[in-house]
Image (cartoon, rainbow, N blue to C red; front, side, top):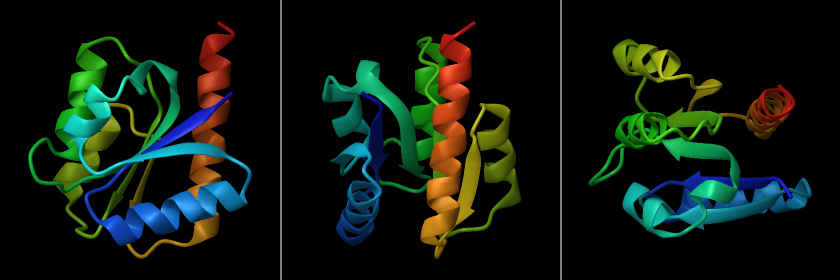
Length: 126
């Protein structure tokens, strides 16, 4: 099973993203914060992480950094309402698959998820 974990503090974004992923036949879980995700027990089972950049508490970039430091190689797709190039560069340096600006299209997100899952599959075959 390939699990997509969605971490976003905005309930409407979480709900819309989960609805989209469900309609595309993907298995997903949603979390309101990076801390909730880390405490959930789903980190080890996550195949792709859709992650908001700006959240209270631990930010998306900080979560990605924490995951990388702890040896978790989960493909990450960042979503953000703020087009800050230095944040995009930091996300890319940490290995983000995509960095989407809100509002993004459903096709953009699903395309990024397909790329992330393909990358995860390729890495597991090595």
